[in-house]
Image (cartoon, rainbow, N blue to C red):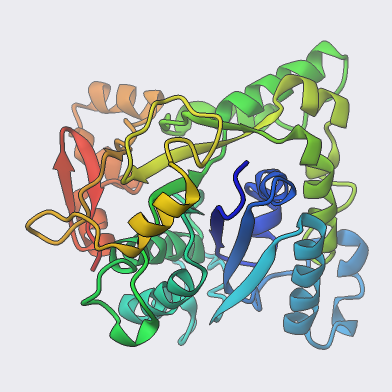
Length: 365
């Protein structure tokens, strides 16, 4: 791997960097890539999820500081650099009806405020590649959805010399990936556990896979040499991770043999790509050329959006939902809304979605 490449992994809370793409981060660090993890919030409203610590929750006087210390330990385990974006955890609302989000939280911050904060970090670190979450946040936690919104808006704005003048010299990242939940990985691990006569922790998950849309996951990074680093980083988040829980129930030998990769969806690339890929930096040239490209004003459409070489298509509705729509004669768009893909949701989230060649083009607010 050529020296000088830079990767930025954008996450909602401390611990997300250890459960999503962690082994990939550790792999690239070991190969000489600079990797910066950005935590959008401090995880202040997280519950204590480790049952070994839950009984003593009242003795933890400052959960915010504990989570900062855990994040520092996780970063050390992965070898990554780390920075806080500085916003406040929104919490995960529960109830029927759902309660309002707390005032001043990340998910309620004006998008221009959160975008400028991330643009500033992008222009300082100058990543060639960014990873973040899909338009549903990976799962519909308000901070995860906001992380997607801010990441895509910052990707659009970071290279624009007319945007956020006080946030540093323009810099344009060249590729954005979504860190993905991989149904294929889940199926393989589930079957391998059954074949070994072991109980699979994923039985209920497998039953629900038909309810999830199929995503365009074409990038598979082999990183099994760093699964142990991933686990060490997870364990560093002691308040959030049960050491006897599901994360650690699959024997390492099975994980490495059955599915030795972490998987990503290429969301946008400003350089030509050849899918499938096995490297987040695939398609990029020498570092000096990529640095010059990142510092130059990127090509844009007349509406100001970036002119991309590739954009990932929105997923089709899951099979069960599609079948229900056909039986009920319900329009597909209404069902896509339940998956977070209705035009109204997209326009509110990103200022509108254009389509080029049938593929999604994000438009920043």
